[in-house]
Length: 151
Image (tube, rainbow, N blue to C red; front, side, top):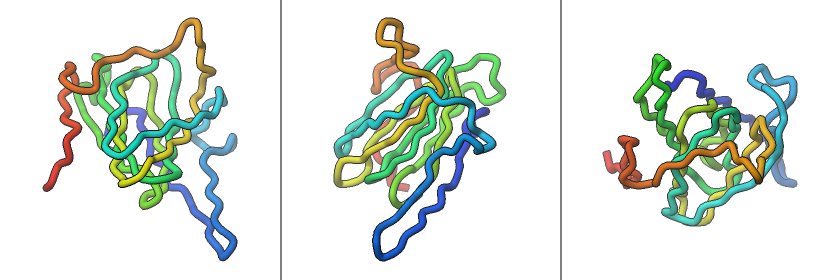
């Protein structure tokens, strides 16, 4: 697995009234700091990729639908340089994916309805100078094909 990426299983507490799931706590061993919380969505089959942050660490939890989240380690000094990792997040796999800074990432909605991702990054979004560096989703230098893989 890419150095610095962390998968944290989340516990869903369900009863006849509904369910509860804690996504991130300040006493969690992997908690760094709080920047903000935001929601991002994707419609079925839509890919949103690629970008990385120089400073920000992301914490993704998918609360509706399913997403395939992919990481690519382009850090030259990393022991996992060049690795690609796929993670499947959502209602069928309630986990938090911590994405280290300087690691490219993107996601694709793989459910038949809109998927909703909640992110708790470590930094505030700076509208004047965003900590975001992008490549095209398809045909970039990242060796990944977003097409479904029937294995």
